[in-house]
Length: 101
Image 1: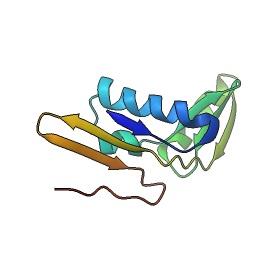
Image 2: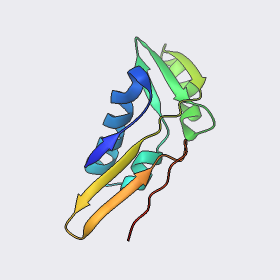
Image 3: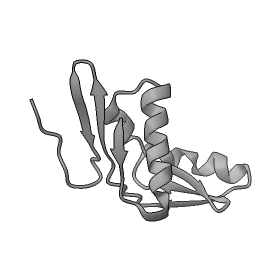
Image 4: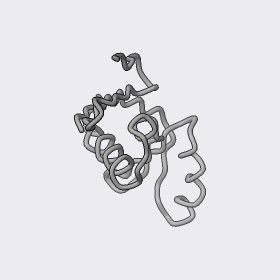
C-alpha cells in the first residue's frame, strides 16, 4: 500500500486510520480513505463536521472528553498493489480522481 495525505500534524492520524480500516477491518481502499475523521490529539477530540463522527459528541462529552466538531479535509490518496493490478483511491474531501485501466 502506498498512502499519503495533506493535513499538517494530523497526517499520521489520517494515514494510520486508513491503514487500519483497510488492513484490519478489510474495507475496500476507497471506503477506508473516505471514512470520517475522529482525532484525539493533546487530550481532546476533533470530530469531522457533517459526518457520522458527530454522533460521538455526546458520548465522548459524557465520558469527560473535550470535543470539537470541525472541518478536517485530509486529502488522502492511496494505491494498493494487488496480484491483479493496482487499486487506487482519492479522498472525496478534496480534488483528485483515480484513473487507469
